[in-house]
Length: 241
Image (cartoon, rainbow, N blue to C red; front, side, top):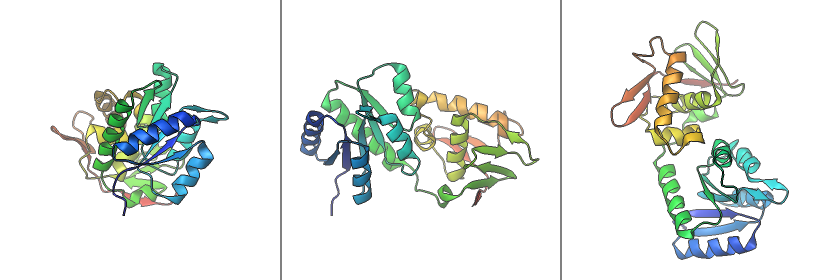
C-alpha cells in the first residue's frame, strides 16, 4: 500500500512536468502528471491525490477556472504556478481556493518546501463533518443557507455577509465546538486573499461578530480561546435547502 503523498502536476509544458516529477520522486513523493484539465479530472477519478500543482495558464484553459471548479466538489490542496507575478494575480489565485501560489521561474527546492508545508496544514485539519453535506445549517435560531449563500437571523431578517464572512461562518458551523487555529480557519474557509497575514482572520471574525452576536464585545457564539484560536459554541443541525 502506497504511503508517500501522491502529487499530481498539471501543466501543459512537458519539460516542467518531467523536471518536477523527477525531482519530487527523488525526494520521496509519488507523482503523476496531467497536461490539461481533462487529464486532471481523469487522474482524480482514478486515484486519491493528496495535492495538485496546477499551472495558472494553459492553452485554452484557465487554472483559476479549473481551481474554482475543483473547489465545488473537492478539497484537495492546490499550489498554483504562474508566470504572472503581480499581487493582484496572486490574490485572484488564492481567492479561487488555491492553498499557495508560486511564480515561475522557481527553485524546485522552494516548491518542495511549500508542498510539505501545505500537506502538513492539510493533515492538521479537523475531520470532515457530516454537516458538510447539508444545504442549510441552523444554530440558535439562525439559518445559514449555503446553496443560496444567505444568512437569516432568528427574527427572519436577512443579514448581508461578504463572501469571506459567509465562508468563515460556514467553516465555523461545520466544525462547531471544535477549537480552530487561525491557519485552520484560513484553510477551511478558503478565505485566501490575505493568507500570509493570519491577523486578517481576526479582523474578519470581528466583523462577523458585529453581525451575529448580541454583544460583539462579549461574544457568545464565536469565543476566543487564548493562544489557540476560536471556537463556535452553539449546537448546529443540518438539513436540505
